Image (cartoon, rainbow, N blue to C red; front, side, top):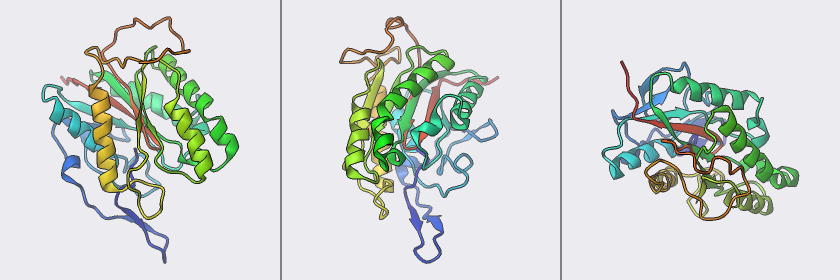
Length: 271
């Protein structure tokens, strides 16, 4: 989600630079806002995570393409507020309850609601760093399910809908497959997975190219809009997750992407 589309590493200096190319699908739109690092709403533009993943060079991610695609497909949707929280190169253990990244996610999500609006989606695209070692890959599913359940509890949304992205790449192919199987097999209600496998990669063989980021954003938008009118994602298979709130009706959806998290809010109102 932080976005490395168009980011190139200089082989001599080792310095990463962004080519600055913003495709039409990622252009600013007055109906798309982002919550800045200092918790103010500003016009969203690439790179979305420039002041969030501030220690790295950010380029094009799927966020702007996602938001523009939603508005293109549903011109009655209203204002979209994006809440970027991604930090690149992180292991899922760094997102567990009580960690700095987890607490920042919750803090920024709660702050985003103060001006009105409704949480609509959490996009989760992360996991490349968990493909270096077998132990991390094999414990990924348990940690991801725990993360989703903890967020549902702490954000007070018991049926928090989540859209996951299954990895397109990683460090060890065998371990990539283990993590992908976990992402495709999460056994919780209101969870869907969009598969990034096969999308073109940057020369580093790890990050998606700019066109691939755009395509992923469009796929995420399609997945988001396929939800029912209440904003809930229905599960096509039984879930072993908590079912006491299976009939809970809510008007939001949450989704997460590549080494990051983004909360999506709609119908923002300001006085």
